[in-house]
Image (tube, rainbow, N blue to C red; front, side):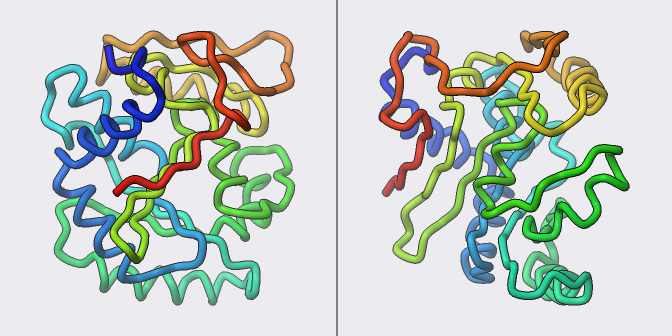
Length: 224
């Protein structure tokens, strides 16, 4: 089982598995050319590709879109973000899936209107990735200028490979988690979905499936 391999081998396996999604590879290549500040391809397109491959489904099955996050706090206007979105639309034209581009420096400006709770300003793309409703979602990949893959995985990779969905009650409300997991279980019934805690718990460093820990509990790795 990949989720029980040493972390360096899990990272190699992640690149191998994600590379089976040709749409994802092309999005990475074009995103690297776009070169937005602090960008990552993140969330569903990554862990759902892994779920598909692990469960012997086509790599792109059930993937609604490809989320591209970047961080630019130099201009927090909608007009500045919209200009980037329009430029990205041209870069990603012709792909068989939608690529959604969002400036994570602006999330606090609209989050409360959408979800009913305030969101402190993010300080980086990584900080935004940390706040997804499920730890499985907290995953980012980008292609560096030298061709290496940079992986950001603050909760490790074991749950992703083991088809475990774990709540991350640091920002998103319970309803978001339960709505998403209900949809995911319809598409991937093999998932093990853990319940949202009845009392909010502080999210500190946690052991991985082997009971070991990374140095700072965050996987930050570049793969050739």
